[in-house]
Image (cartoon, rainbow, N blue to C red; front, side, top):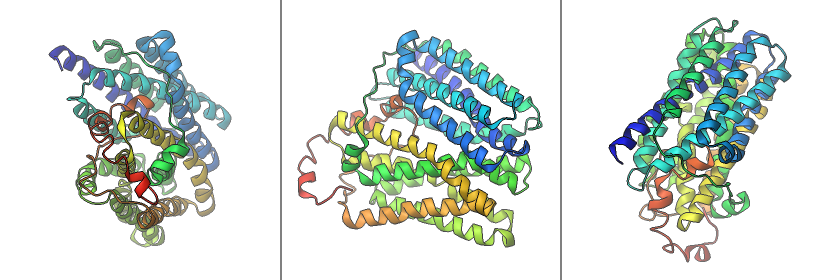
Length: 430
């Protein structure tokens, strides 16, 4: 990458980091503020689901806006819509209005991230794509963790924290619109039907969907759980950040082991430990208290490693760039659907069992992943470590983000035809 491009890319990543800080602040602030204002857990779940549904819609349909007015105008307009939605929230106490505003926020955020990821993909060549993706992932997950501590910037019963969020979103526009990276063209996304992706990698589709259900519930009801436990805002922020930063740190050992052993075995260990920890915490939280809950949230951070494992395993099964890209986009869609559904399913657990309900939900979801994966290991074909590509630290974001994965270009095409006869020889894919 030329020196000018590096400078422009840095500006784009800075804008992304500021945008992520705003996003992370709102993910923490909205559940805490709703609980402070007396909203029910059902309302909190619906508002959380609305946000993820909006993000999913914006990520998959925002390409029409980008083609219509261009990336820069689209980004500026979408972030302006986010600011309007964020600053409007404290003026209303009606759950239906919060649902609409959070959907609009999600839609605009999905479109904004689509623009950013298309820019990054256009700036990266085959040699730099891995570094670009790694930088982007550290910025996003690290930013989400750091943003949790911003929830304590003011009294959550006032509009002050929302104003801070609006300022962050406004500030994110500045470096992005001033970037010197050439704006890439964007085509209408044509995804591979999930049925076909499932036929290629049942483990990949199911795991990405179910872990999406867990992560959606984590962001929606995690702060609500902390509030119900009567934690202070700073304690709640620390609890959420513990899980996010643990997930970031666990990426490296996860990558090491998943590149040397059956990826599904690594997923069984991570999901099984997290599910068991959820049960233990639910049973003994009244005896041990907060230290046990902090430990559990650190273990829960392992869920952020399950989607990259699912993606790596699914791409291992694919042949050629087009099929690999279709599989990657299919898993992003599967994960996005899971994040939308997760809060709706977790809400009744919390309503029925109070704070312990969220832990029971995590135990069911993560334990389910472990059991399903163990079953797939018995009946599905195993890809040997020598046949596997490299584990890539990735998050489910937008269809444009799928193309950032260096394996789509570097390894999938290299292995095209290499496993061509495997599907006929195997009784069932992994």
